[in-house]
Image (cartoon, rainbow, N blue to C red; front, side):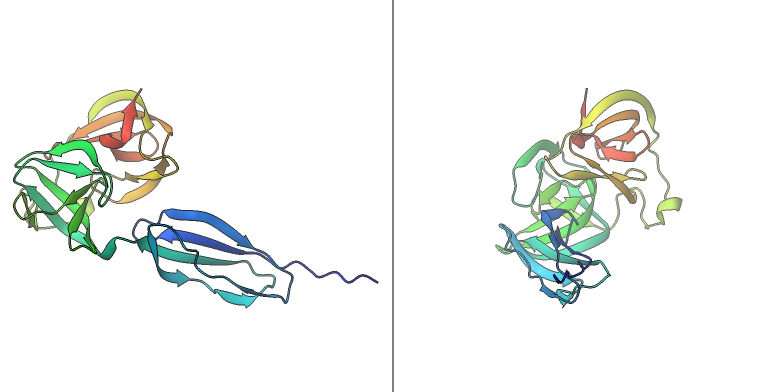
Length: 237
């Protein structure tokens, strides 16, 4: 009589960027019979270095589904730091970038602009990069910018719900397409520079109902049924 082995619940394996939570490799599904052993290891991913793992990398297949997530960091990063209530004052015309050590995105920050920054990256060649609240990047230079603790308007940090603002939304009805990077997505915010509440994938068609022009020159669009998105990531159609 032929013996059949009961199939165990699978183990899902994910590979993500620890700083953005983006997936950096296709997910894997590990399968086996109940009672069989499994072992998973981090894959080698070009331009990334392995950092840590969450979940059981070894075990026995049973009736419980498990998840293993390997976290990576971009290979050129030496250290990252999440920032709160930090701003850069721009003193000389400066280009913004799509990513650390990437290409300029065509946008420019002009002298007198003060922008909120949310992350600092130190690269292995000793350079510092700051990520703006709208996801763009700036290479730091003491000659062209200065780090400060306020935006020049609100001297003391307040809770998001109690923070004063002079940014009045204006009606702006328009269709648009998310224009970022194929297979990647962008953050959607509760309010300009507020809490992230969702994501929109590249190529998604959306409807804009309002716009906000903030004092730093950044335009934000209110996407219906989603939230606020910096205009640099939307292409009007």
